[in-house]
Length: 234
Image (cartoon, rainbow, N blue to C red):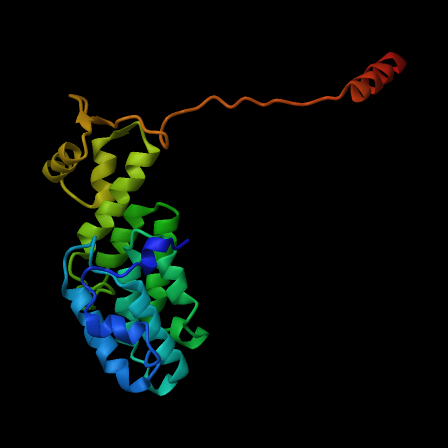
């Protein structure tokens, strides 16, 4: 789900936008263009760690909800694509809650829902194929989102780090959609070791370390006597 950091003011949010979001003009339809322009600036910023303002984008979707005649499906597509690579996994669903069933039936929006499902299931290879494996003449649903690929890889690397102790380098290549040389760089950046057999060893962390499970049952004396009595009757 979305965490508190999703609603902290980003350093890139202009004062004009912040005043709008915290004031009485937040849902003034005449301010829609202002929020759309701000979204365009978010999409043009390739820094995946500081280019997503969930609060502003939710306000824009709410504006569309109040004013259906103003709906711009391409704007919604870009909002969802941005939310898809957010560090807060709940951002996408928060945006989705403000969309009608009719909007969700749109081809681009529907495809983004499929991509969301692939991410949630850690089916990263299918994700890349869905994004870039279609008709070359067809626009990708992530077109116009600067830094999308790197933002997604950052999320995938995080999943790998918290899930595996060892993993074949070839598997990582498919998961992050990079060649062998690029994966070597990724490994070096994240402190992973690659042996001569092409297997990556990852540092142990609380998330990926195997832990013994101890099952403790509390049986009261009264229950024990009943069990023993029953056993004697067999």
